[in-house]
Image 1: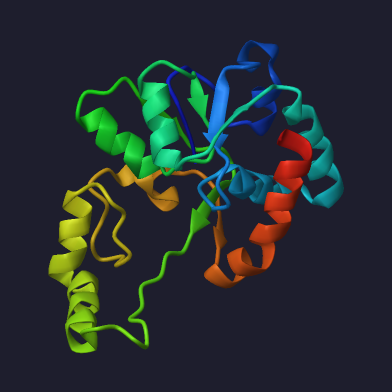
Image 2 (image 1 turned 135 degrees about the horizontal axis):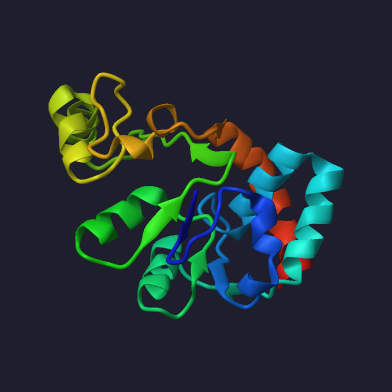
Length: 198
């Protein structure tokens, strides 16, 4: 999901427009919500050959890599330092816009949807308390608390406060990426990012 302060369509090709040259940024960290995640969604959507061709063209757009989180890159867009941040979590734009920030988000199609997980580590100092916390987060009350903070609840019975955050209610396409896929593919995507964009 892309976040920007200027109007743009849902088409990846639009990012190749000369008017965006030097006006985009993204996190350079190795994460799904960063440049390597963008590389991954492009390759999954377009295939290896077409995706690499597109990424080579995109590299000519001089996207500014920032060595901090996508949330901080979003804050730079809000501050007017860049026009567009690529591959940021859309709910963060919703939270900021709700606080009056001049920001909006645009779902590129397909958008990357990451399945987040929660677990209790084997050496947790208080494993019983940790399990209770997990149970609370997955409960109806916990899911509503997440929703009311503009996060996306995992329970289908608890709708997002902003229904547009979910592909099925806003009507945009998404590729769901499992944690296993990220573990397997993220190092490759990061290497491509470094080769083409650094």
